[in-house]
Length: 469
Image 1 (cartoon, rainbow, N blue to C red):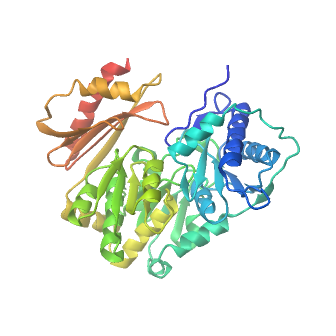
Image 2 (cartoon, rainbow, N blue to C red):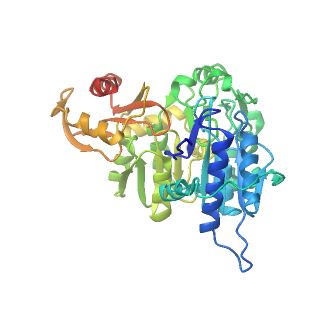
Image 3 (cartoon, one colour):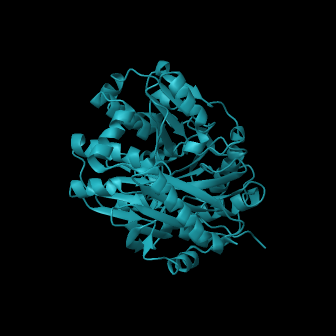
């Protein structure tokens, strides 16, 4: 029986040689070719628009990408294949300026045994509607022969670097004189920061090519960045930057070696853009984010909305509505005037621009936010699971077990559109939801004090644990 292929919150992923096999990649590639043939606008001669296939640094990503490109060619689709590994934001950028659709072979931040692919259209992740249509094409038609159908190879990363350079204030960045330590985590964005700021200012860690990622998961969360934190302090750097495996997620470390949560980073950037660049529109965040942006929206009388986890849901809002700023918990940020997609490099440069424009250290910017909008201690805990869990069923089961008060906090609101999120009177909250990309149940919480946040995480784990056996 053929493996069932389903797209998650951002693309399709699987374990190499188990789910992510050449056979399954061919099935998905043919489905994509059928989707393109059915939906892409052809010219007066009936020719379909150009598409692009890229790949990251993972094991055999280049060969999987070549397979996809060959099947596109067999389906008479004009395809360009990258001649080098690229970050996912490069594909997003190319889907705006040069190609109708881009595919990048990557498993993002997942462990080394995984691979996958992402679809980029109009500058961002393909919507749920698009991925569902692609799924419906799987096995609808036989895979066309791929033998001898080699695609043209090109390095198009310079288009991306020009785009990024045109969307940051290079004059202000030149005023930034400090050192930046950047942990590329062996990922596809290695060397990218040095393309925009002076290489003399950059201290690079784990920039070499290692498809095993040094035995660690290439996810820029605090537990994976001890070397970055240590190096920032040792080198007296102004900022630490960590990228994930495909360069769309980012983490920041201040000059004291302290990890900045996505809540803090988004608040610093959004507050600056509103006050200094007159940013207007709705603020959109995923359900796994916290209260700082909610308070910023309230302060500036801006619309505010939460959407399901996965940046594609933010991107859909950005495509359809007047969204000023969008963010997801996993280090993905975007705002009006830039790509409607995650881009770690742009976020890092924007934060450096804020530091240069204000003359303040990273830690001082965070203090300013706390003084204006309140302290934020945001934590996440992942609980491994051995088998898939139905999110809707789990949410309903634990909702029925909720008390009216949790840790002496009165429950103010409950949302269930993506897991169970419990809000309290003072905007503090806890969320329990199964991951859409990994075999874990995630518990998130945010309060003004670490002990209170930890207590909410403990409550969430106690609430869900009986249903994981």
